[in-house]
Length: 421
Image (cartoon, rainbow, N blue to C red; front, top):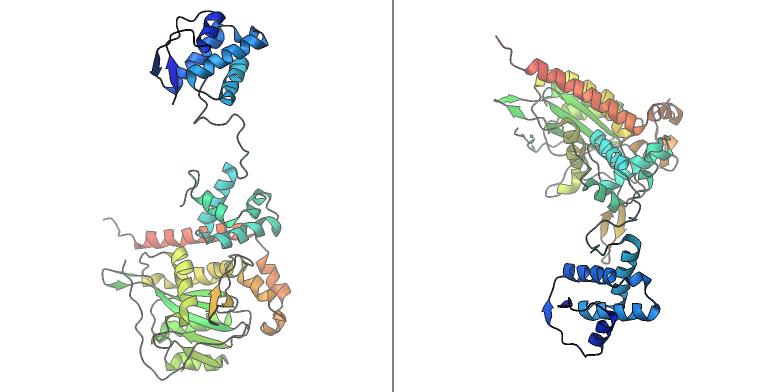
């Protein structure tokens, strides 16, 4: 508690000494901290404190401490402030005179927002890996500080005031029991070429169906190809599915789908036989995780880049050209992914964990596999793939992707808009 006193009658140092020795009567009253600061400033000026001798200074200091109830250290700070600035003020709540230097500046936050806008705000570890690649692999000096950012601090920047981030009914495919395909989950044993497939519907509008996206993901490398068809009948689906399977740089060994009839049919089975894909598996009952990888990619990739809005089916060929020629190469050569590690728990059950390191692109994951060259298709080499992978930086590829996507949707919007008479 701060105590102030009626001290207007004290004009000399002898009166102050009498007060301190108990020889003067004093009236007490409660006061605010601001009143105590004003009293200190007035007393220092009244007695010319800075020109007094040591004994007199001690007398005045004890007098001010008795009146205000401040500690010796507090009084020392206020006297020093008065000597240096001529003022006695409450510095609480103000910005420090010499604040801590900010490690990440406004330009870094703007650059992070640019990356998130270009790539659709990936997870923290994937974003960190991309910025590290942008600096270390592609030599972009703007990412010098962000290349070493921690995962926690990345989210701190995303929550800062300077950071800015830049939906149609869905029809799910219905499982149909058909005696085609083996009901089990595939076992790639660390080898690429075991493909998961699923279909994503781009919504209905006024009773009209939209396009369907065909999403294929390799289980080991997460190499991903996306196509688009007008309908999921065999006439439209099989040609696009064949093109997507033949686009993989490695030999496809297995094909796994859910129980949707668009894949569990004889035409798809014949296609897999034609392409010499030996394993055709499908999801098991009450095992929802059998196709979890590709279903996760439906949300994290297909919906993120193509959205939820209705796309009329007459635009399937234009969307298919975009997904195969622009989106798929970007996903495989420039978009980092997290990869699971199997860790046994105390009861011996295997749990999947996704460590932040290494986070890398599907292409670099493929190159990192032991004897990776043996998995490539005949006549294909990593030197040929490198020319595609490193022709542009990750950020340049993201900007090119966004530009192509904007052009595609402007075309769809222009040709879909009702004509004005």
